[in-house]
Image 1 (cartoon, chains in turn brown, blue):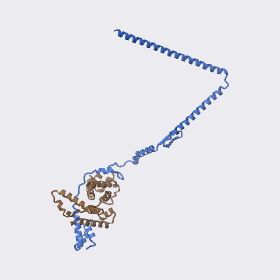
Image 2: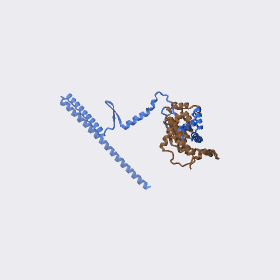
Image 3: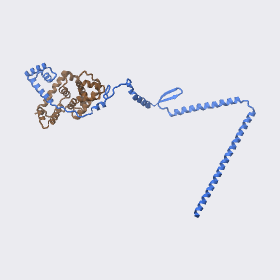
Image 4: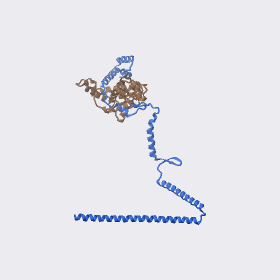
Length: 186
Length: 220
């Protein structure tokens, strides 16, 4: 029954104490959040920890959600804050002087041509994850919010506390850096 | 060689929010600007690669545990809505526990005296309690003595001019009482002696019987 309800209705019901509405809301968004967490943390275990922290934060602040913005925007504001907090706690940063060659990624089709397509996809995910980890944290977050979550630059600017132009500059810098990493090394 | 439009062109071209007219103008520029054309091609290659991320399914996790771990700041998921107007009463047990705990910690004493209830904190020293009790007993004893003295004075005032006959009758009464007491005592002693004598006789009879039984048994 709850599966067909829009986010606003589920949130309103959850705010009134409906456990099934909360469960439906979580199930609707958890995969998107989990993949965000996977890309932003080092291990699947960390990703699951972050996922729980994000939904705990959402649950605690559910009464504050007024519907002025999309729920997904509000959700990723919390996810952003939790991810930054976790990165600070664990002192996670891009590896220094990484010598991995990501040029193989430019032939990404090779990964999927194997006998087991699923394994190939997972391997590609790991390579992309390693590539993203080379970015500075702010650029990685901008790529995450713009490319994967498809937020507007205004929304990203609001979440990150910067101007929309700065968000655009970070995005461009991140794309450029990723392409440089994908270039074959001598 | 650089083009100042390159960052904007790349970013806006990849942005799904970009308006069609704006996108068309950017593409027109890219056709004529080699720097922007290359940069856009590079960015599209990166975007194409990132787009191949395969969504991973969420592992099973305790969704309800989130609700159990922390209450909502207002209301609560999985809780019954408040229906009672006196919802603040739910804090009653907690408040009562707090008051009791404070009373225990502060060693509060409630005494009921002649002046009503009195509230005090801490335990009074034993010496003070003993002193207080002694003082009360002394007052009581003095009161008793005073009462006795008053009674004697009243009796003497009443019989202050009694005659010698009255004294003689009183003495005679005391002597009679004494004689009666002596008789009772004598009678009691006599009874005790009689019982002792009977006891000795019984023991002697028992001893004779046992001797008889032993000698009879040996003969058989």
